[in-house]
Image 1 (cartoon, rainbow, N blue to C red):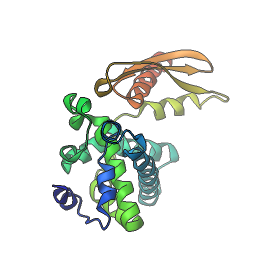
Image 2 (image 1 turned 90 degrees about the vertical axis):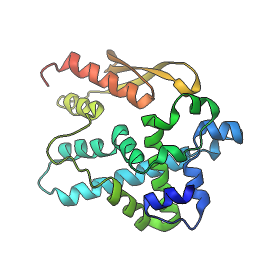
Image 3 (image 1 turned 120 degrees about the horizontal axis):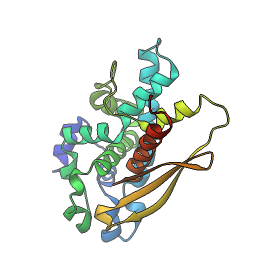
Image 4 (image 1 turned 90 degrees about the horizontal axis):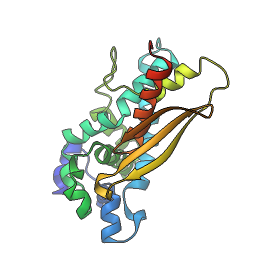
Amino acid sequence: MIKDLENAIGYQFRNITLLQNALAHSSYANERWHDPLKSNERLEFLGDSILGMLVAEHLYRTFPDRPEGELTRMRADMVCERSLANVANSIGLGGHLLLGKGEELGGGRSRDSILADAVESVIAACYLDGGMDAAVKFIRKFILVNVPVSKLQNADYKTALQELVQQKKNQTLSYVLVGESGPDHDKQFCVELRLNGELVGTGTGKSKKRAEQAAAQAAIELLFPNA
């Protein structure tokens, strides 16, 4: 079964345990091994950095006439949760994930946040197994093919808000997780956004990232209604 995933990726692993680790969600690691360090979260951390750097380099070299702010928005669009989940769906990654019982029952195989994290984990696994060339091959094949040249597909409200508030000096944005509810397979997070200590937006979502984006969107609508 895992050979099917290798074929979809277009990369054959020398150390297959790296790919298996990339597929292990924290819910599975906790239930199976009672050890969260055996989940794919550490690989996700590494993959996120590799992905961000390689996409940034590609945009820098490809668009020499684009300013920093526009390149930032383009990169954010390409590596956002929705975009990475689309990549996961294109290679059938959800069907290969190792999930705990609760996450399985809660539809974790189709949840954008889980799929996006798994893509970053696979990128890290490719890098550790085959070096930067292997990571570059994956990113070129599945991510750099969808560069938002003219219109951004997935709004990144956090980046947009940061750029708007930076028009004035000494502005500080802070995102504070104020609550979470629901079982592990169906969490709901609540985040407050403060500008210089003042509450300017509240957001909820299935992940902290989504909640922060929702809070940033609310803040833009409040502070910059014509932006």
